[in-house]
Each structure stands twice: as C-alpha cells, then as structure tokens.
Length: 147
Image: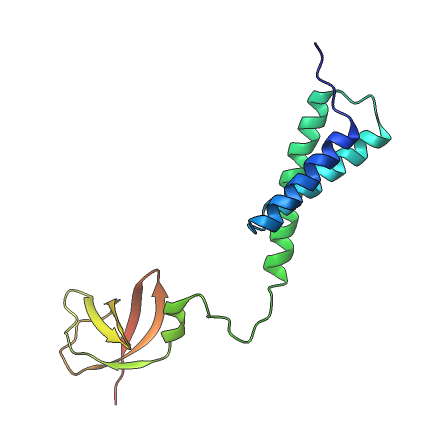
C-alpha cells in the first residue's frame, strides 16, 4: 500500500501547527507550520511528487525557515524600554557594593537587595567597595573600586 499525501494534508498540518502555536506559544511551531504550508504549495503545483520527496522537502524547509528567522532576529532585535527585564543578574551591572564577606581565592558572596549572589574577583577584605561589571549565569564578576 502506497502512502498518499495530497497538498491539503500539508495545509491541515500547517493549520494544526498554528493552533498549537496559539495554544502553547513556543514560537517554534510557527516556522514548521510555514514549512508545511510551503510543502503543500509545492505539492499543489507538482501533484505527482512522491511522499518521500515531500517529507524531505518539508524537513529542509523546516530547517531553512527556522534558520532564516534566527538570522533575521539576531540582526534585528526587538527594541524594548526594559531590555534586562527577564535577566535579573544583568540588572545589577554597574552597582557598587560594600563587601560584608571577604573575597578569598577569587570567590565570595554579596547580598544585593533581598538576594545573596556568588561573586568572582580579586581577593579583598571586608569593607572593600566593588563594582559589578558582569554576570555569568548566577555569578557576578566584580572589580575593586579605588577611591
């Protein structure tokens, strides 16, 4: 028995993927839905295309649509008035903190607002003022402030 896929099968898959995208916004199913729609469009133009080639075309178009979106998004990021909203550690870059616990062997801890953070920087005693200059996951990179 030969598997038969018509163009409208691909369009139904595309609609189902768009519905999945609406219900569970992952912003991933949309690009696969576009690939399914384009596969259906190619099949509409070339109705004798075998199912193996259809699946191969769908896979290639899926990868291409995702890569095209990533390339576009990285070169045209969405502008926002709060770029660090969901990146809590980055919100603290530039703050100056007085150490309550010394930095020993390049590692220490600081309390910022209501949270305790691990820090990395030069060894220094309690009372030293440090500036948060970067963040690596949940570890702040700090530099000593010379006054």
